[in-house]
Image (cartoon, rainbow, N blue to C red; front, side):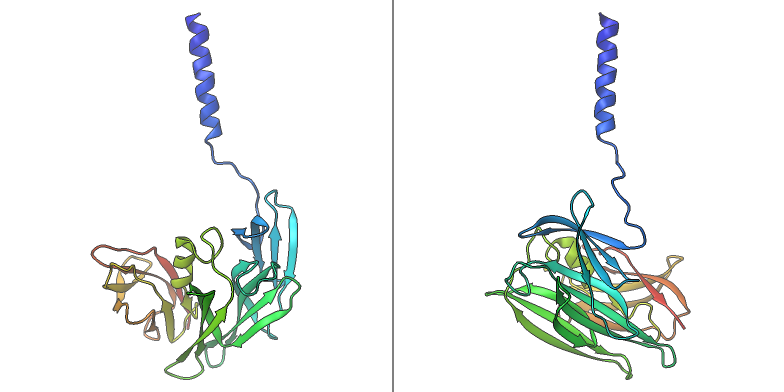
Length: 267
């Protein structure tokens, strides 16, 4: 009897152990994927297909749900998809999304970006030439879409901030309002790869009044450091004096350290 009990105990322990294993569920080949909770349709996967300029949405069993073909300017390349929602940019409960594309001028060595918002049938709801990245802030009524427009064809580069009123609210269960989404949005670098300069958006915690944005080479040596505070939400760094290669950057203070992000410098 003791042996039987011992055997059953081992079998039960093994069963619990197996249930806790990391299990491969699906592979989306050749595309980047993310997971969202839509207010009406629930949890979905979505992928950014750069080669076909598409956003595809999948059900929880990974079966295809919707395909959205994105209109981008001639010779531009799809760069990023943000805010895949159903009722943020309008209230008709259909899918809308914000996406960014870019083109690189190899002769003059600068990037030009384009930001658009489209619905699920591909109709463009908003088009902003030069729009590099954006962020949605909750407002007293609806939300505010901030869109930063860059001109890298001049030196120093210029930036304009366009503010739009939009009817919907971001959701803590959807894209754009979770700590991870906010972190990814705010610490993007444009252009990336950079040539002569790069602009990095940042967001300090409320209890951190001043910090340092530090740039490291791949050997872990700090090559640049800049003081940042709540006065601005982005900083432009000169990279013309850096050797071509991969660099890492993060924001640090005595009580705070952001995630580490990658910057590529080309010549």
